[in-house]
Length: 342
Length: 272
Image (cartoon, rainbow over all chains, first blue to last red; front, side, top):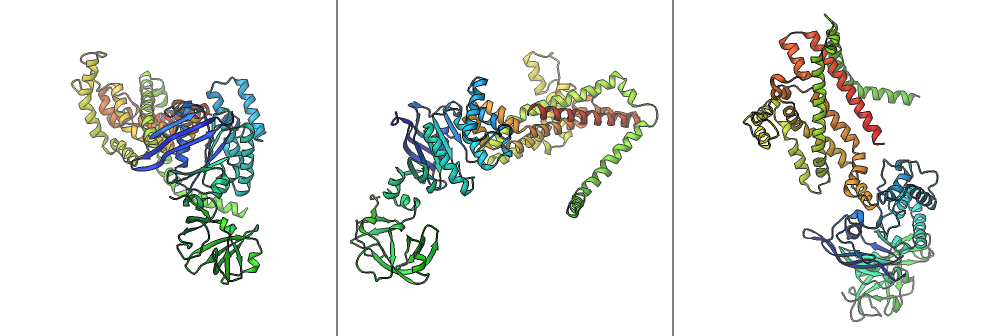
């Protein structure tokens, strides 16, 4: 059953006048899978999520949920559970009443409501807060109530709209691990909108990278990072040096030994030394910036052609080189990853 | 301690101008009015013991309730629509709804009179439905006064509700629908509950303006306009019984204030 498609977006599109918010999107989310919609703001990821929830009407295409066409179904009849970026907790209702809201609308008998709310409260460690109003909770607690309210109705698909963006950095990491654990344990089919590539990499089964309303690439975090399909994906997921190679030289004259076409070189694949640059896949430059990051050092090497080459290496780089001094960058043939011809 | 005292002083300083104006222009005259009502023969017992005057009071309160209900029922959907419209025309449309307020009460009432006389469009229409007598006219009727007052006070209700509904996060309605509430149920359980402050404020404004209205009730209601403000006018200018007029004014103030307070309390409790 794990390979059955729970959610299918079939040529889904949304236009506003002459602007295209989402262009013919095809996406399948398998049962129990977590797929991230990743992209910069305005890329159409939230519009896509809201079309699935039924808040925005698609201009074209179909949405199938567990095999049923829900494209024109009103939002309240769809079996989706959404966690909003602002949480959208009902400010006039207590924690327990917020969580019970969906169960009440479904006509679940009172004793069962109490039981399921209590289970959710325990699962999300909200014990003792049942009678509080949302404004009496911390940000992290509010986020958990929002999650509980969406999960308690056992939706066919869980929709997460930037659920961690209002939490501080420390809490964010813990919360996303917790949510991933919950999602895996309960086998929740999940569509997750985020603009944070690290967040998407950390908890997704697959990532759908979107840009300007288009789906640029769909793949596992490793695929998307190691085999980016487009220049945009390469520079949005992680950092990248991009060369256009023709006849063994880049557009700015660096000798390259690798495939022809548009090439991606990840900063962590580049090493720095003091020896002169000889032969291909080596270039000398001036260190423009060295920043110590704890786990390593990030360097920016200014090349004679004006290019700024990004380098990531061990912490010791900061001791061996200094800003304004010379350095030679080197990499291996296999480190140059060709993008499919665009 | 010193910090607290300073804050108190600043707060008092900020409040002082408004409080002073309020005291000089409202409390002091009201007090004078009240004292005046005590001069001469007993006025309050005369009012409260006379079924005619009690009827006038009841009429005014009923007028207030009717106009408030009409403006609330007509105003809420419009205010909701304007508040949720995703167009830059919404602001202009809101401005358009306030047009009745820009026209003088006298001019507006004359316009209603044209429609309300026996041969006027509105009266003709009602005659046509067969629900009223063939010689029926809206002028001089309670319903006519309600219609004319509701028209001019509707913008006040709409503008008040609009501001409050705009303040209700739209995603709260989305969340309710996402959890299985139909749009109507979401509106009832979420938007209306959260907009109750606006419903209360709008109702109080419209109610107090209705019970104390003079021009519209006297022009549309005509000789049979038995409303408080009209009666105060008669007592003051026609019968020259100033103490009694002052007493009526005081009674109107106390009664409408207590109605307002009760309403506010009821609304506050019911929605919690």
